[in-house]
Image 1 (cartoon, one colour):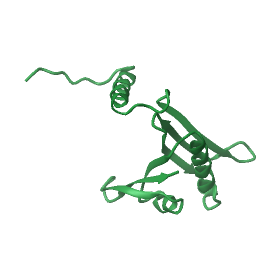
Image 2: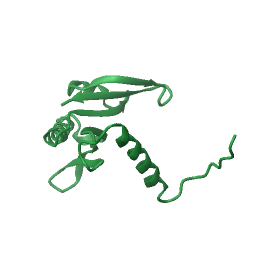
Image 3: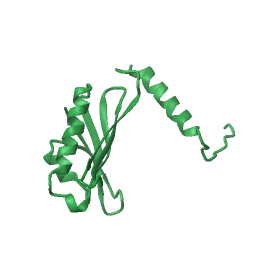
Image 4: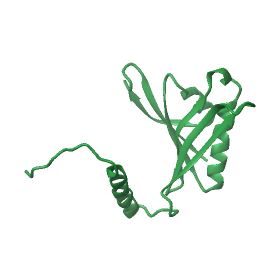
Length: 141
């Protein structure tokens, strides 16, 4: 067995590691576009300019959208802002060639919300965190 050293990553190591993974991925499946990750985000502000909802995602080289965060301020939940901002990002992504959206949420977050928006569950992690479930959902655009 060879001797290996485990070390904490330093500044710049993340970019190197990500770059190597992207390089491998692209050798297996050619990209549809030259840019590998394109941010897709929107916010909703109130009349005072305060952010009351936001969505953060990115489109990958194969035109799939990953939504990392969708948040609506507690005082504005139930007003349809989540549905509207999600539909906005889906429409923008579809116009840019996306055919699939995927995300994850916990049982204490927004699983039922996403199901109402046409998403379907394709995976579940039990006890993540302990006593809860993490759901992985997708939607074909």
